[in-house]
Amino acid sequence: MQKIIAILEGDGIGPEIVREAVKVLKAVEIKYNHKFTLNFAPFGAGAYFSEGSPFPEKTRHICDDADVIIKGPVGLAVDKMNLIPQEHRPEIGAILPLRKRYDTFANFRPVRLPKALAAFSPLREELIGDGLDILMIRELVGGIYFGKKTEGASTGMKYAEDECTYTEAQIRRVAMIAFEEARRRKEVLTNVHKANVLATSRFWNDIVEDVAKQFPDVTCNSILVDNAAFQLVKNPCQFNGVMLLENMQGDILTDQAGGLIGSLGLMPSACIGPEKSYVEPAHGSAPDIAGMNIANPYSMIGSIALMFDKCLNLQEEARNIWDAIFHVFGQGFITQDLVSEGYDKKKVLSTSAFGDMVV
Ligand code: ATP
Ligand code: MG
Image (cartoon, rainbow, N blue to C red):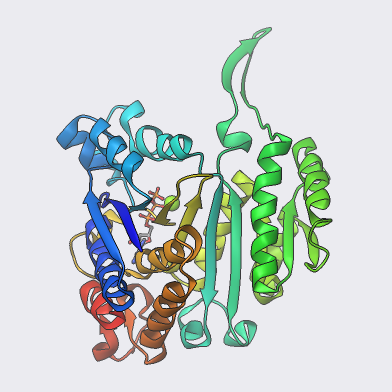
């Protein structure tokens, strides 16, 4: 297979973890006889300082011409970020425009904690049983984050307002993708909502129930988001399978899930659009550990596995990467973020050593 891949290294630990992901990508290229053309382009806070824009025109062209995009985390420590005008900060000036440009409506965030890693998570080992394996699918371009924002005053009273809107088409397409995944995994789908309070949630549920009719083989449960937050801590494995969430509820619950498994460095993700998709770690640029070669590159290497699976439809390549990652963990090797007191220092790998092991 021949593919053009845009690579946006981003800020902070971005270049370090992207380097390891590219190592893995090249190993796959050789093993399976693919041909990948890699086009690097500036993106994020660094791009603002070097190019005058966090998402420069030339980067847009490179992304437009690519089959898929690999994106590292973006952003700087607060004091440096304050030097950037609001409209050029990475969220507003780079991430949201990227999502909008390619209409990446479905965000896949696998939350995987195999037995080998159970001891590093804040959960009691018996709660993890044979392993935690939830695929969270979050709607990414609708809902309250994209609604109109107003601040004003009415009859002397100041107020602020965020509009939350979902259209039938927006809900239907993400629900379809989630049910297809649940069918593929032969697993339960849990639909998360707040229908006891929100009109958008009641509408969401109506559409999800309608889509479910096309998937009689998939068991569909539904749960209020507040209860889901509670149950996720108390008994996370009950959600093994697919969880479907709207934008803001998904934002919060997926970060909570990262906390459950012990490190944000274990959170890869893929953002799927109708024509173009990109993959990125679910965490930020971790300026506190940038340049130290101690970041956990799992989130970026796992994102490469997701790219093969969800964006390029190369499942065997993806499985091979996951197997390699979990084989490394299975031998007791970990990165600094997972270390607890008294852990064998010889088993703690640097960012680059972890990448080498996976390769
Ligand atoms: P953002 O606002 O961009 O999401 P954030 O303020 O949420 O950023 P992160 O950059 O995600 O913060 O970092 C949160 C914490 O997690 C930091 O202590 C950081 O060092 C740690 N962290 C994030 N990613 C990794 C990683 N891949 N490996 C190790 N530690 C990480
Ligand atoms: Mg964050």
